Each structure stands twice: as C-alpha cells, then as structure tokens.
Image (tube, rainbow, N blue to C red):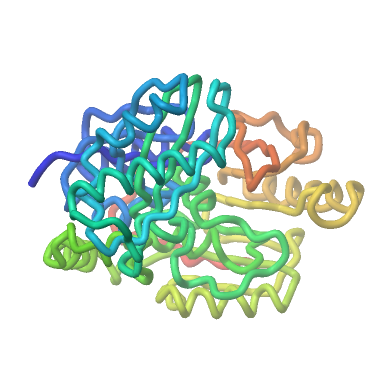
Length: 389
C-alpha cells in the first residue's frame, strides 16, 4: 500500500496525548505541532486511527502544502496536486477554509479558487466539463497559516467525539475526547477505583470503561472514508476485526458516577447501555459531600460546575469546599478536576501538584491534579469492594 500523510487534529493542550495514543497504535516518526499530530501511514492507517483515537478531533488526509502569496499561486499549486488519486468522477467535494496571519486573508476567495483548481484538474483527468457531485463526500479544507497552505480531505466525517452512544445531552456536556484525555492524564489504572462525583450524563465513567476494556471508541459509528471507493472494504473489515479482538469484556472494574440531578443520571444510564458498558459502571444519586469509599487507593476525576457555566460563584465554591472535604477524607486518593477557577487549592485544602491549560469549547480551563501516594503492588485479583457511600 502506498504511503500517505495524515493529520490528527487536537484541541489545544491535548497534542501530546494524541501522540501517545498514536505511538500505542504502533505509529512512529510523529511530528507534534500546535493543534495537530502528523504521521505517515497507509490506507489501513485511515481506518485504524479513526476507530482508535480517543482524544483527537478528526483525522485529515494531507494532499499537499506550499507557500502562496497570490491567488494565482494558490490556483496553480492546488491544480498541480494529484486530486484524481482520491476524488472519483462523482465525488461530492465541498471546500471550507481558514486563514491566519496570511496575505490571502479572504477565506471565501481562497475556497472558491481551490474549488476551481480542483475542478480544472478533474476536467483534464476525466474529460468532462461538468461534475454533478452525487457520490461520496470528500470534505476539503484549505488552511493558511503564515502564508503556508495546507490542503486536506476529512476522513472522519462527524467529529471523533461523536462516539455514537450519547444521543441526548444534559447541561454543559463534556466532550468525549476531552474526557478521555483527562482520564489518560490522570494515569488511572484499571485495577484502581475511579469516581466521578459530578458525573452528569456519564461521559467520564463511560470513557474510563472504554479505556479499561481497551475498547476502540469508534466501534459504534461510521466514518466519511468508509464510503470512499479508494479504500478497499477489506481494510475497514480488518480494522474492525482487530478492534473487536482486542476488546476485553471481562475486565473487573470499579467505576462509579454520582450526581444530584436525577434527569442527568437517567441519561447517564441510557448512555452506558448504548455504549455497552452499563454492567461495569455504577451510577447513583448522591451529593459530593456524601461520597465515600472503602477502597484504599483510587482516583476522583471530575468536571464540576463552573461559575461561568452553571450557578453563581458562591454556590460553586461551596461545592468545591465539599469536594475538598471529601477528597481529604480519602487520604490516599488522587483528585483531578477541570475548572475555570484560578485558585482551587484554598477550597480543596492543599496545593495542586500539576496544572495544565485546556479548553472546553472556547472556554479556557485548567486541569488541576492533586496526587495521592503511589499504591504498593498487589497480586492480580486482590480487590476490595468499593462503593460511593
């Protein structure tokens, strides 16, 4: 199979996590840049990365990159690329764009020129003067940054946070990709207990179950490139079979989600059923102040309410005080919380060990981590029953 270049896009602050996921899939020689990770692979790589990446936003196929200071340069260099290798005669290929710090700043003009250049190239290839575009969708993006043009085709379709299990959302939902990144940044291990005391509609517990079971997050959805005739169906079947073979359904887990909102919990249970992990997650209605555990070591991973998001600042700070009291009772546990609050340590009752700037949508947050002691090694299967309260 011919080598191709892919770009796994990522939210700010998550690039290293996406790179780690790619390395775990066996990909090497990665290039990590702001908002993206570049890799060289083959057509099977399109299938595997879409199925397996937990924290990436999309997987883009890179057609080419070049410098362009004029619209004529943009046209000619776009036309010079081998579009016919990917776009069949009936391809539906809309063009979207963005331009940052570039002379060619009119996005609409750049989109129109790229579209025209591709059409002219395909006219020469297919000997046609008109394309009805009734076939598979190939979403093309022209991205300009500091006068450098990158042309890509989106292989994912819907964003990769669309796992297929969350049909309904509560207030201020957390993206699945960000939840997966939070869990991986916590270094939680499946042998330990995990509690989300503000679980909402269940995203963090569900993503934790996926990670613990080595379950590919894309198993319940489809991707744009599945409809492309360029990628043999047998490659998708191979990738799907690999994912099914590696899914460990039998892993004993201690994953808990609690919340005070009965409607959110009802959605959480529905989502867990849709995700196929309802048998390994325990949800219950419980305020954070009443969360308890008989498990000596564990992790609390939380996306608590923000003052900007829900409720007023005093109410939110009251919740954080309760969270801190609960955490300090669980003296050997670790706490990982995503918040817009700049100084949570005065509410939690201790200094954070690590802080990382992340974004939920366009809202700047910090992921504060308070690490507990490292537990001693235990023989496999030596578990203690855990429950919230």
